[in-house]
Image (cartoon, rainbow, N blue to C red; front, side, top):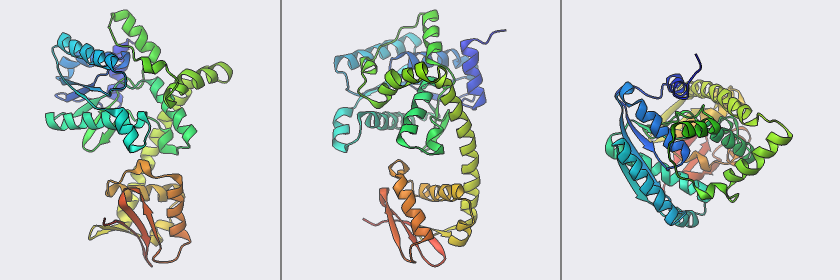
Length: 335
């Protein structure tokens, strides 16, 4: 019997253990085809999983009246499903300018901050977002261009723990073409984001220019190849992280808010594990690891292997890494 669209998504949900009976799920709804499909699917699974569904919509204030129309559309959709919707407006262009970061990064940061805040206020278990297999391929290619390691090239995680919440992506094994076909068959209405057709953002240029070029001249199946690569790398990276975390616990001690890692035991580990041990230590301080560059990792490596005792490397998020005679010492820098 052929697999239906809903069956395929249910298989993904089961594969990654995304939902349990009685879950409270916040659905991020932009009004676009992916998020509308996600809401429709979860609504159809509502009774099977005894779900409580809350809709969240963020107006990033990128597109003026068009953005306000998106919000009204989402409110009407919530009424159609008899679901509650929470929405906010955040001036992302202003935040992007003030922080000196790209509009894409600012939008992502504010969007997930909004989702987590609402989830905490409402006692929500899961935050569902509408990333597809195409989004996965675009993300992997974007990270390759930027020089990511294994973790980055693993792309978007189907399930991710963020500060006590689980982000789930039930459409991550569904292609954009499958979403479009499903919407056409079911007659679902959705909003079109005009900015998606403008090659001014990195992701848009990858989707509109680079991927079509690769499909035409190099590999017509590149999106599937990239998505499969991401899935394989995720599995391998998860294993290495678990192994490194065990090693970290066996060779480290916390003393008065400092982390001490036995330097002899540390140096006996393979290079790939050493880096993950340091990552585990840094995550103990909840530092923003996104700000760590390749150069930072090289400086830590140089410190541990070659620099004299009592040398220090200062990292973003106010963390210092020092070396004494027997330990690597990580601590927060007092402001």
